[in-house]
Image (cartoon, rainbow, N blue to C red; front, top):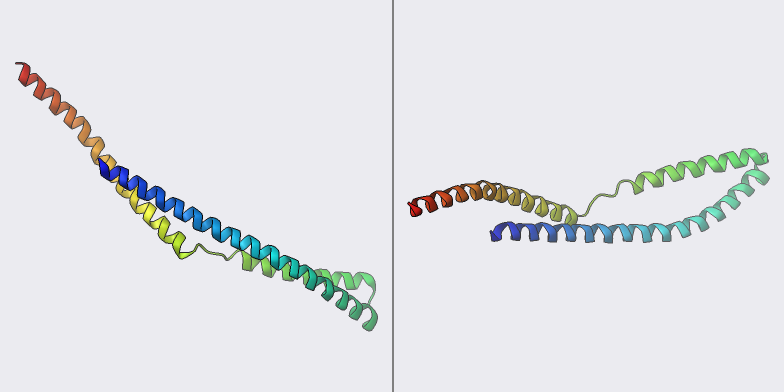
Length: 135
């Protein structure tokens, strides 16, 4: 009877560890992304002003062409950054904790299945034993 309790505790501890690692990774990603965003906004502002001046003054383009060129470049940069951000994978700790939890749960279901089968059989055997004692 201790084995199911122990396996449940192991599964719960592994799940807590996995969620803590996931939360730490997510918080780190968010903080880094926000700091990077501040720098990117500054760099893009200066770059936009420089490109705007270069295209408008030096190349002699109209305002709307300059805006379309800058917007297209910004879109391409945003898509590349989104692609990079979407490729984050779970850490080794998260993967191992998930594996431990899955093994513990698998062992728990096996143990519980045997206990569920054994318990009715013990009840039948016990009631049969009581009948033979009474006679």
